Length: 131
Image 1 (cartoon, one colour):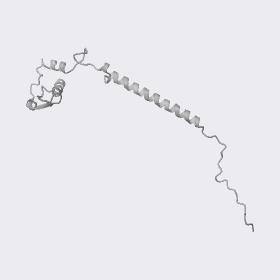
Image 2 (cartoon, one colour):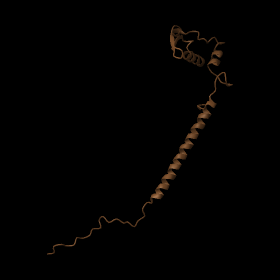
Image 3 (cartoon, one colour):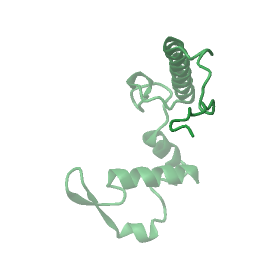
């Protein structure tokens, strides 16, 4: 009997190292191209959103904000009130509950009636204009 018999070699974990391996530089280039494409797509999306906002009048740029009494063709609270007066709809003919209600004007800290409070007056005016 032999004391140290030779062990049989196993090819079970023998990998073929001769194949093509991914080159790190190629992955970096592919990642750069993909990142640039994503950046370009995001920029195009942002530009399209800005164009839509400008076209629909929802742009917040100061040059695009029109004000009644300053810019021509702007309809606002004064125009609505002036248009309702000949129809005897301004001030509202029937204020019901609002006649006795008072509201705190946080701008000056005073308690005011519905038609004297700027925010309440504007809401009433625009609601009456829509009726």
